[in-house]
Length: 143
Image (cartoon, rainbow, N blue to C red; front, side, top):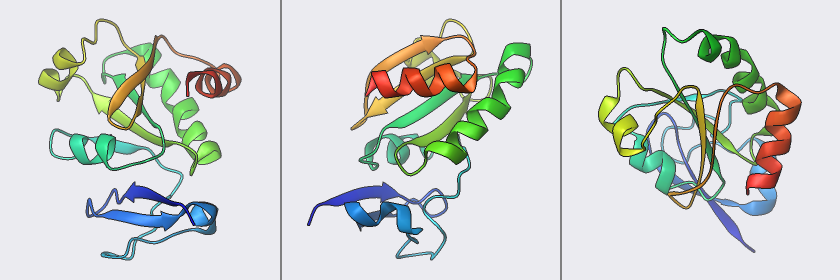
């Protein structure tokens, strides 16, 4: 039986879940919180490595800033995608104002920028806000 590693967004523990049980509402073995809540994870310097490297599913990151109008208008779409597409993807947001070093390391030049990571490595990138349908289509083609 194959397993999938999923990091807990609450305690950062890595959980090995049978791959065919991802849709069954798995809980963290350490803190007992649900591993999938249909919510976007707030990325900080402290949890980036765990989030990107300890999830076997693709991690989709929205790089944004609070002053950015398109970023704010895209936020509900990104949140709906998290609700619709977990547990096939993990969704996270990076505030480029608060995490300027990470934004620089990732070479973020415009926002919003979406980056898909698989196994800790960037596999796809797109700048600009999308409607839900095109977002889902882009994700399906990216991984």
